[in-house]
Length: 378
Image (tube, rainbow, N blue to C red):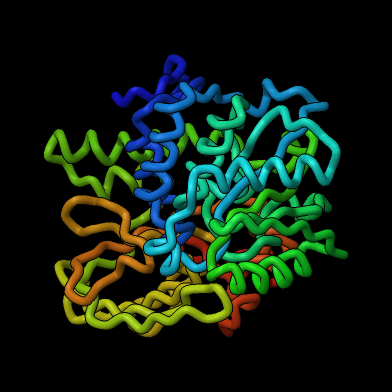
């Protein structure tokens, strides 16, 4: 087991109590839940581990132990994952974004939280928490990764993304206060493009009571569970992809080789399509992955198999290592796993925020098991 500390096992889930200087399992699990997006988890891991080594372990607080009057601020990277690979943030940017927002609000934060558990943004809060001497919450606002600011469960609860702060590597900061969360996305995305297509943001300031109402609980613990399940399966010469699918409650829906990837960075997003030629049980078939930072839809043999908001995850066919959308390469042998999202995403409001039609796909929302989401037919 890593040096990330955990409480005794309850059922099949370990509950984190502290994050130590080895974030490998957490980062690997976050890459899986990132569904191809959320930024390079290796970068986030290195930043988090360096921060913990410098400032000491970060306490982790369960949602049920959070005081209702807690002052919770979220911190994350915003921008195109393809840019984040080359344009690395400084550790100080995360704390600077938090300080900027706290000063604007006139509050003293008591806890730091993840806005999305996928990719680099699962470890970004650890960097800020370590520097500021604050605990992180074992929860997030999505249960996965999504590309836009308003695509979080707190939006369904009427919680505002703003005021929100942005900080870049040059020392620039900005604070936005918008009429709704979609406008927060529009203005923050425009500013992020001007900042070089990636920046750090602090947003969704809320109380402990609001976190209890709207967050997905146990997200960081789930990351560690996924990362350790993958590593344990490999060590035991078992199928790591099957191990990941089992923890996710998902299914392996396609196996093959990447034949072509069309990818471009547009308005701060990495958009594209990957074509997969089947192998093994899928020999003679083709699949297509469509993504905007994250994988949003998978088609098998010309038919839609699974769409957002459920998870579409690409894993190395042999090692089970998660592959991000910017990491997809010609010739890579992959397996595609689909898995259920938090059920609140399948409400009419949730599908309006992050269903396939929002992203321009002419299809109802299809769940991980191939059935049409009830929310899509209401």
